[in-house]
Length: 115
Image (cartoon, rainbow, N blue to C red; front, side):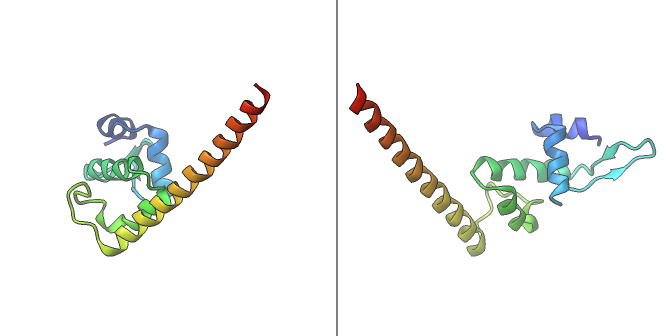
């Protein structure tokens, strides 16, 4: 299947697919006319990648789940290592949120002092 078809079927973009390929998460081969062609199993893999990214993981985090990407990551029980990756990502998100709340509070205080 060509890149446009894979993008359409998975709700992705050709640019995102090339990015996943660059990170080694999906593979293609070149047809005689030079087009990228993907195996039909790439549909499930891309959907799983997108699911993990939507859950807040990064591509580097998703790379850790590479052995699971051809299965059903939405219903499979998480491995202890997978849980550690997700917990570390959640901690990083919580830290960023705390930092943003601090910035917001300082800005609100500054606006209150002039207003």
